[in-house]
Amino acid sequence: MPPTPPNTHNLPGVSAPVPVARRTPLLARRYTLELRQNVSVARRATMFALSLAAGLLVSAAILIAAGVSPADLVDEFLVQTFTDPENLRAVLFQAAPLIVIGIAAALAFRARFWNLGLEGQMIFGAIGATGIAFYHVGPPAAQLWLMLLASLLGGLLWVALPLLLKARLGINEIISSLMLNYVASNGLLYLVYGPWQDPKDGFPHSPLFPDFALLPHLPHQVSSAIVLAALVALAAWWFTERSRAGLYLRFVHASESVAGALGVPVQRMLVATVLMSGAIAGMAGFVVADGQEGRLTEAFYTGYGFSGVLIAFLARNNPLGASAVAVLVAVLFVAGRGLQVFYQIPFSMVQLIQAILVISVAASDFFVRHRFCPVLADEQ
Image 1 (cartoon, one colour):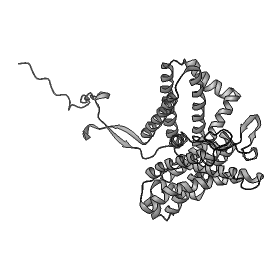
Image 2 (tube, helix red, strand yellow):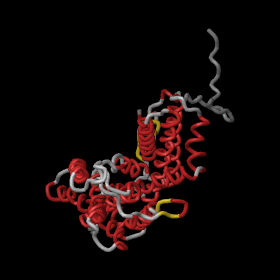
Image 3 (cartoon, one colour):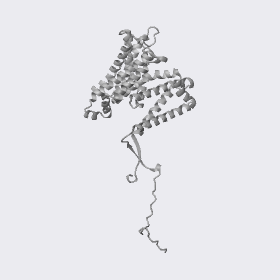
Image 4 (cartoon, helix red, strand yellow):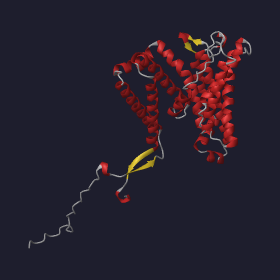
């Protein structure tokens, strides 16, 4: 029997051997999902930019698979859009109503009022403006301003209906505002097929507005609607970020019960913000009918409701962010038309790209607010 080696661990100057740590393979670890307590602005901006870039890369891959070369994509979306004066005017032309409708959605969502009746409010805003021109209300010099005021009033009154239904009867505003879109569209059809139909050609639209009732053009044939949209964006930013009402609105958005306990006039803020949202949506109808169509048409509002919700969501309900996103959506529309004409890409592909961007930004919001943490060995 071999002799047992002496135990030298307890001898002076001799240290015990250090056990080698066994590391768990990365894929074999267990993880838990935790909420982040504090999220910096830099992290939010970084995650938003990365998610947007990922969505654009996926969209580019789909377009390349559909037969558009990478060089043509760069040419259509960047070179032609921002260097060709006609395309640049088209982007600003499309961006003006998108900015206004995006801000209208963002204000309502900040008050936790899910206003999906933006198209109905656009319709009644345009109807109010058209009524001023059709019946020649006021002197010619004041008619444009009266049309603008009538559009604000029309959108405000139409959003007041779901607001009243929610306050008095507890009816969900998503359902009521959405259903009222159909009521508004049928009212529009009655007017353009009936008393307001243009007698010159018999098509379903109103007569052309007189020249003095149209939004003027800036130099280089740029519509002044983009200036109106910029003023709305600045006013909405001041209201949400610099005014006392904006501070109250942040409390209401965070928690209505806590805001009420702190003395914030919750109901007053809710009503004022939602009415403001409807009025601005009515202004968007005025911008399209007066600044783009020059008359009331049967389908001028189509697609703007979805675009407004999309813009507000991507901009995190920030008015200045909504303006930037609206310009991006306008670029997508203008470049998408070029792809349709020259590369036979269907418009549904443009809508698919919008959906991809929404999903990407939604994913970024998840990763901004949450993180994956490994479970320690003693917790397993």
